[in-house]
Image (cartoon, rainbow, N blue to C red; front, side, top):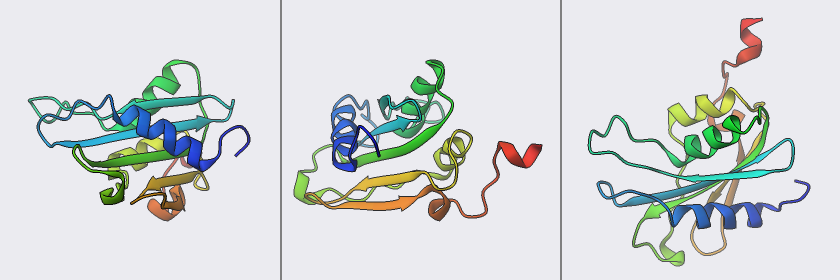
Length: 141
């Protein structure tokens, strides 16, 4: 993964998680995306009293990257658990369906996905495993 190991990318997701605004669910999530240019963009979940206006950490990070001109994602790391969770009690927080499809717009199916678990455990998968038989921009050509 060139300049960033999966552990370093998880570290960036944990840093982003600290900025989560999650007063309603109490579930704080951070994400960090490695782009094809080698830059990392991070984001946290931002909740809203109307609930429908809430944005997930994965899309926050993706929108930041896209708004800076990035168009290809290589990997994403996600760290989420209840706000009070300690490292030992972290749970795996997989991206929701909307985030999976959103990421697919800017990533090939083999994009690496790293999910933080308890202690130093990192679940490693791909976007294709999370979103099999996906629909992407190439399907419209």
